[in-house]
Image (cartoon, rainbow, N blue to C red; front, side, top):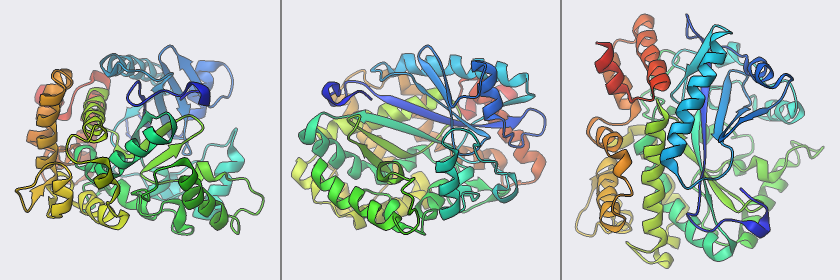
Amino acid sequence: MKVEDNHLHLFQAYGIELEYMIVDTETLNVKPIADEVLKSLAGEITNEVTFGNITWSNELALHVIELKCSAPTDDLVQLAADFEEAIQQMNRVLAEFKAQLMPSAAHPWMNPETETVRWPHDNAEIYATYDRIFDCKGHGWSNLQSMHINLPFHGDDEFSKLHAAIRLLLPIMPALSASSAILDGKDTGYWDKRLDYYRKNQKAVPILTGQVIPEAVFSKEDYYSQIFDQIANDIKPHDPEGILEPIWLNSRGAIARFDRGAIEIRVLDVQECPESDLAIASLIINALKLLVEEYFVPLEEQKKFKTESLAAIFKQVIKSGEHTVIDNTDYLKAFGLNAVDEMTAVEIWHFISRKIDRKYPQALDHWRDELTLLFDEGTLSTRILNALETNLEFENLKMVYSELCDCLENNQMLRECLEEAF
């Protein structure tokens, strides 16, 4: 975000990052040309190019490209419009390469063992070291696209409040954002298979990911001693040259960046269009505001939740998405649900959204249609599965994911695109 002396305070502004696949226009197969595309824009090999409010940058895999706001912003409505314009601009550039952007968190038929091409330019030594240790050709490395939300904090007091709130909300975030049910041309049985791979893809050094849900640490000093120092210790036998920094290696579902005064949320699958992504981001941000303001329960109660119990809920949610039945009554009480024994994840989110409407009138007004569709018709994984109608033949997969590409270009959610197509 900014240099330490000028760190933003809680909820002053946000940084959003969206990742997309580059695919061939005709076949929709992945097309590893991110370096060529960025070079065509900058005139030389580079890892990022800025156009006004949006910056394009590379990722580990050469068929993945990221767009992010060039600076933190408090106007998510304008940011959604900026993303839409940037995507349409990029698709015009990609057309010269007979390529286009594809949304969703996983390519439905990519074979990462044979189709992965790693970024070969600057930072190549870092990527090569990752590959040597973890073999970065699996789905959890080269076939995953996500949305990251960066939230600012200033000092330990704000970090403590924000980290406690994020830990509590992380387990049910995939119930909004799951979009990776299809891999290898098959229904994986998971609503969020990306996160299932994410949990396991660094098993050679388990401390890097932990349980995805961060440990209950609420100060910079404790974070360094309990997380960064442990990472440095455990990676050393695998990286004796010291190429990999502990701050880069931290792969929890939310990571603290004390250098820029921000926590980055990483458990969100990217959606079919920026309007949907930003609707989810707005709902999550306002839910975190409620928790930080102790609307449901005091901060000290939030801090008491064990990582293990939160991780158990998280595992359920990545398996079953919005349909997950949560019967941890302590967790339900943390959101003011004192009179129920169980509730589905989407029902919890619907309840939270009504509390947001009461506490912050108009906060979600711009996103009302997107959130209503999400609550009524389910996550993108659910809507993809419904569109496929159990027919996973290649041509049907291609048709549905072609519609997703149209959704991205037109900044529309999947149902709207399908209604217009048929």
